[in-house]
Length: 395
Ligand code: FEO
Image 1 (cartoon, helix red, strand yellow):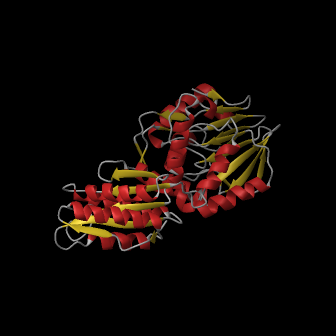
Image 2 (cartoon, helix red, strand yellow):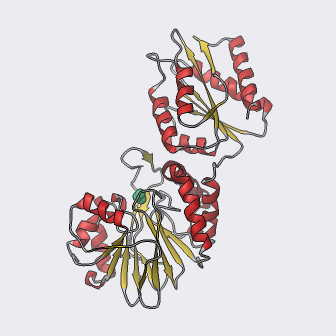
């Protein structure tokens, strides 16, 4: 059912408590998610975004309880990935002539997804739509995170409908940030930024500065996932500016896979060396095969440096490490230092190959890494401690 945001704006989305992965299996969503849709009732009535395809009938059925669908004058589609446009077919079956406001790229994506010849109205930055006492202004936000993305600002209520921007995969029956566990919301917002938006950080900084320069009053940010930023909405904008600017904390993360515990022993010894040199640094050790990949990436995002460890297997590195290296490349982390380590039995290719992958991913590799034959003995582990010390000194 709908939830009141202001007298004129009602949340009409879907809270998905069951969601455990998003983008297929690419992104873990330990705390579920929501697909936020908003109904604006002024002299004109507007629906902003819909919901994910599996919930299309539920969405339209609930929307009918909120409003006679024929009273909807306009639909605004800020972004047309299927988690937001998925209910359009079901909705447009009922109101086929209702104009859909979206960017030109948005129209082509909707056409590509649903193959329907609906009444599209293309908008670009600065275009407005008067609703009576209030009005909407459209702001293209290309590649944040799709080519079609735009934000919609509602004058009068001072609300920014930001779609994926400032969102979190976070299911909550409460709608507002001031009613939720702040630490949970921020963890999910940061994980979301790292895993979805980080590759587009230069665009994020540019777009946020462009919007801030408009000096628009801002009472709320209503994203398309998770909670509404009602209490001090500028806080998440400021956080985005930090996250988008080669974010790092005083943290070093060691991510490793291990077959017979030798690479794990090396990880522990390297961590000991880092701690000796930098006792104030947060050091985390994460088993790549056991920990969630997106949580690992979020820890790397927070780190000023990281190490990747793998035993050599089949003249290369492990399956779990391979997936992470590919994701590290795609997420385009900036200004991070790294190196590699691992045990081996004969060919010992993994360390060199990992470093090569890190370099290709734009990471500064600080040394050639360290590898140890078979099970490391005390002397070998002492060398790993020294390696950790040298690594820490290079940061
Ligand atoms: Fe939430 Fe890019 O869709």
